[in-house]
Length: 242
Ligand code: PXP
Image 1: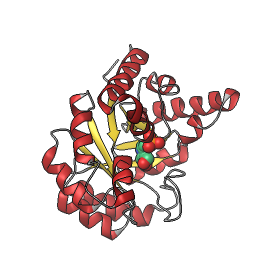
Image 2: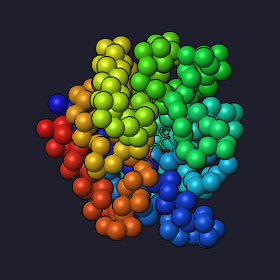
Image 3: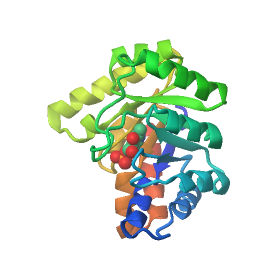
Image 4: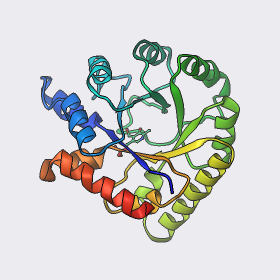
């Protein structure tokens, strides 16, 4: 089975920094530690309200890390301009509502074709690998296909926050969606709410090429240190894959 990439989302290092408005803890330093500990990529979400990652972080990350940067962004002209200026390796289009605590659901790619199409085309023309953060739903995969997105990232929030039979159903939905995406030539990724306890069934889905994980890793890093936590997540993913 192919190597499953781990993208470490460093947003919440910036959340802690911004609580005091100073310079530390530095998300760039976190990205470098994650890189040394075995991350395959760094993910950062530049939100419209700049509640964690700020514009300068994107510029600094591009300069400081050797790993590919996956910039999560809302489908707005402002974010498009920033992505085109910095040219991250990948741009993951996420839905964004200012008042939400986190990205609560997937993008409605099926319902926003005309809005998304020009934005996706401009990102692709700039050589940026476009990903759409969607629910594991065949309608959304069809929409991603018609929009020409090379990658989809499945929202694993519902899986992560459910238990028992409900979680089993959700896992099946993600596995089926990953198979459908791959069959149609779209590379499936997954993320949101993944932890040491729930990552392995998702990591075992053979078509999934990348997991993006943030909040849990940064929280655990308080107790164990970021390097060891990234290493342990990497180990669990490899074990599930092997
Ligand atoms: N993938 C996407 C597209 C996200 O928006 C987020 C949350 O910012 C994540 C992955 C990571 O989720 P978590 O922080 O819950 O691990």
